Image (cartoon, rainbow, N blue to C red; front, top):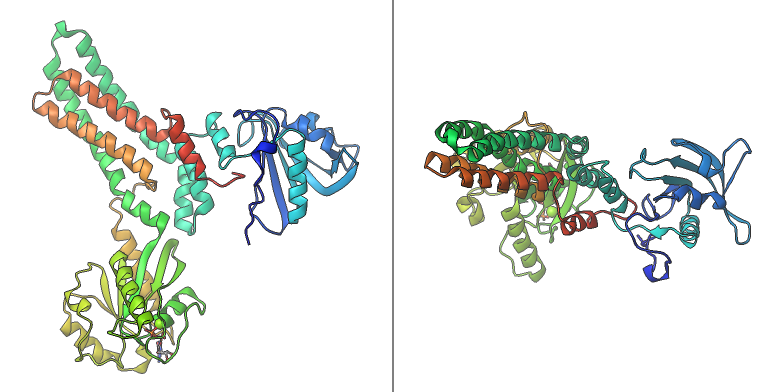
Length: 480
Ligand SMILES: Nc1nc2c(ncn2[C@@H]2O[C@H](COP(=O)(O)OP(=O)(O)OP(=O)(O)O)[C@@H](O)[C@H]2O)c(=O)[nH]1
Ligand SMILES: [Mg+2]
């Protein structure tokens, strides 16, 4: 039950809605917890908090006189009637040394829903405004504390499900992506500068030389951009997870394998063929890679309406899969007609997985299966003994890694926005380069380079529109 604890009717709130007023929000997740943090940022935040906070000891300074990075224990009290709302620890950050770059107060209070709400309401009554989604990060960006890719990384970090995704977001948070892109920007600028020199002083007539130099200079820039774009596919998988589908005929052990891989009894397992009637999805972490593992209804012709829907969902899941394990059980009659999918299917990443290896028939079966489908990789496993599970995980990892073209690249492009900007820049550079070889005039080449620079500046946020900023930050949660 997630109520929106930060929801306030904006009409009730006095004061302006300008971007540098004081905004406040509960920064910790909704619901009950041991502790919660309420965060308030904007010029005058300390003065606002001062009359509402009674320090626990006379040794503590009044809030407005506390120095940055210090905290004080005390009580949040309502001056209207002197009632104590909660015992808290208040931390002061002074501008510009805070996350947002503004004066910031953080109140660590107890995590009861009523307590958090009362403190939030009190601060709002005394002049703060409920923060919009992502407003704290937006302020940090506006105040030059971080660039756009770093701000986006903050959000990725919050929503990262697996260690590698978090690691990549953390690298972007450190600004690695922008650093790389800024190197490209500098190089393109230098090339543009020498080009414009020739354009401005045509009497020197060095245009042939300039064209030659430019072509040679642009090639490596283009190649780097292209490499980064190629890394997007891997970055996307890191962000959205690799989709791995367990498919096969009824009763071959798909659900049992899902349970074994996810470590708990997620899906129902019975000896009755046709147990699973819908797709069952579980997000698991395989060596730091987020994996959407999907168990499907066993494929067979059936008159049962519910099962029919399940079968068509199973086919859909297979179509969207990055990797399919097609399970074959030793109990299955190999000579009987297998679903036509398997014969005709051209999914590049379909692996034949002989299940129930503990039944001890697999060696012969394996040879038979391999003979029947010589082009496919054949593996074995048992959900009962756990045999083969490590190989399955390793296979998932190598599938993931096969999408990565350049492993030296230490930051992956994960956002489609970034990819779009890189695409635009790379295209412009390529046009300039190939155009110059075919007699493109220098001024057109210069225009193309400027277009590439604009696209890259949009990526780092050095040159963005208000609308774009709004779109990006609206994806954030309130309190961040
Ligand atoms: N011996 C042995 N039995 C298994 C193994 N995996 C599954 N089984 C048994 O096979 C039967 C079917 O297992 P499920 O996991 O429900 O198979 P399924 O492919 O999900 O079946 P449907 O959902 O009906 O398509 C159950 O009785 C399981 O206990 C295994 O590795 N070894
Ligand atoms: Mg099942």
